[in-house]
Image 1 (cartoon, one colour):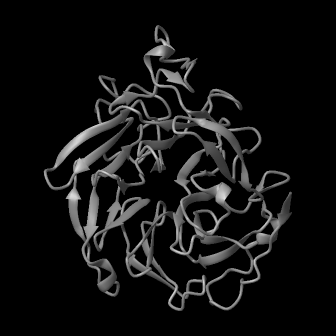
Image 2 (image 1 turned 90 degrees about the vertical axis):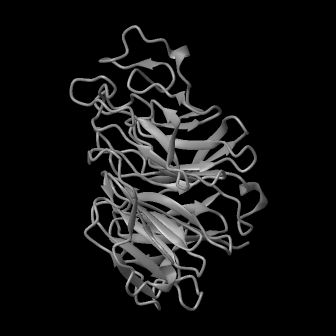
Image 3 (image 1 turned 180 degrees about the vertical axis):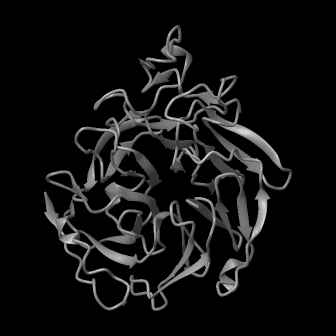
Length: 370
């Protein structure tokens, strides 16, 4: 049974926005959602520093934020802008005291960041050879279990040929790359990926799973968005020829065989726009939530009636998805009224889960209590 939850903690931090209608959100019994911080412009990917700082990238605002909960009460009391005038710094990650921030064509490193929040400087550009197209050029980044930096490169169009094409010709498009920062070596992790804005590693197999947004202008119900699994380096997932594992593209699918490409492990609704994904491994949620895959469906634009605008949850095996169900909904209201769009997840040390929202400029905190 699901129920309406209104967080009782909207006041007190000076940052929580009482205007956000959290009473419209539904969660499973025992779960609550509150505002961790607002005034976080265009909040996208998040990363947690060693000293508890939550770093947040933005897409449209060109900012990087440092969000601080000084007293540990589950509500931020400081939101600092530590970098500005960047080009779509949607994604970031934290490793060994350093903050890595992705722009469209480059990645910066801010060394020893938590000791330099007041004057972080402009950072050091450590990767500068990425394509500069803004269309699907924003990207999430993260370090994998192998210690390498994973970097998706989206397609610079709705659908097009990007290797040997007339307008675009760069083999880095439509892919997920990884960089060995020590040697500078770049490796292809996956190809045929239209626009992945979220990925995570399976807790048992350590294989990479990623979301991918389907193309537009094939109607309300085609093609499906996808969750994919990389079982072998360099696999091709079909774009721009085959969508959803078996749907030929009307422009580029002629003569292509679905069996030549890797199908998704889950076909989601068309246009739901899955962004961040996260395998939950915390200890606060009930045992049955362990290793569940949370998916932020950012929501549609290319559809006659809106879909998505939810946090979904997948029950997974090591190789696929058995069940896909709603965990949080209510950001989309009757009449296609939208007041929020979930983007990405960040697990906290206490087992709670943060969710960013680039439409409401907010970060939510999901907790569980019996």
